[in-house]
Length: 40
Image 1 (cartoon, rainbow, N blue to C red):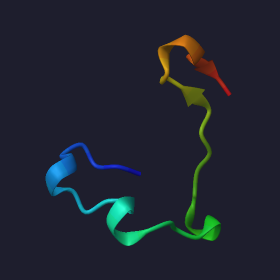
Image 2: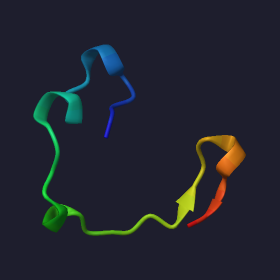
Image 3: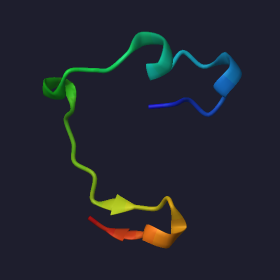
Image 4: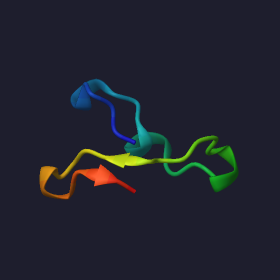
């Protein structure tokens, strides 16, 4: 994940990937890129 304040964010570029076991939800909608918007 990337933070919205890119120059000052402490995001995944800083601390790396997280284990799959730490993910607690599922994506169900893609909004970017706009040409591929829709349900997953």
